[in-house]
Image 1 (cartoon, rainbow, N blue to C red):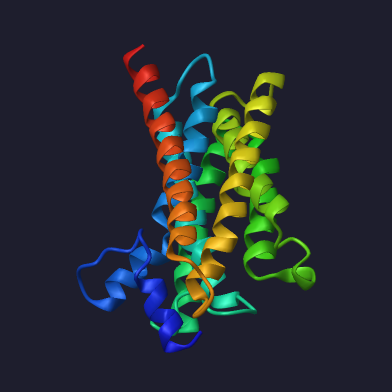
Image 2: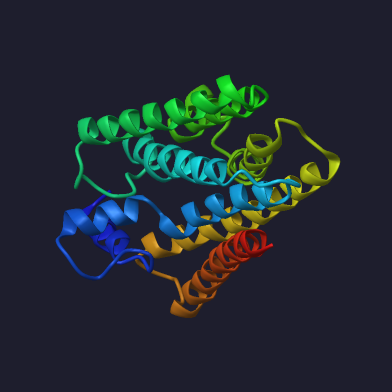
Length: 238
């Protein structure tokens, strides 16, 4: 990515406008609105359980923040075969160190619960680990770096993870909700790709087009996060 593209990326709506560049890029690297969506998906799955184990809600939120928010996005920045989304603010070695340390901690937390309470979660843990690497490092000639696999891995599976961590079982209703959140993630990524392409383009793009897509992305992420917070509050007060 050239300097102009890097400058444009650091000016994204979810990147703070204050602080040193390295801090701003670090926050941008986490893609907090989209990470927040995935965390909300885990809450939605958790909220579908008849009985809530609140320590497990906290655990699944922390697991996905570490695995997706930090590790997956660091790998995406380090392993992209196209334009590097954040330039060279962080070295490849730093990104790999960040990704590996966060992933180890995420799996350490998950393994504790899988061994003691929820062995069914191993299925989700293995699948998410595969997609985290295959999608972000573009393994198998990028075959899994597609919108459909994105929606499945970071839309549907987090819902199942939240529910399974609470119950150690699966149900038809939660499968339907997981599919619904997968389709919502598909809408998000379908809007995100042209948005990024327009932001990188130097000519022939109307500012209004970018603003429309940006509004869609903001609305999808905020509404999903509010849904997760609302469900969390409802179950807590119930």
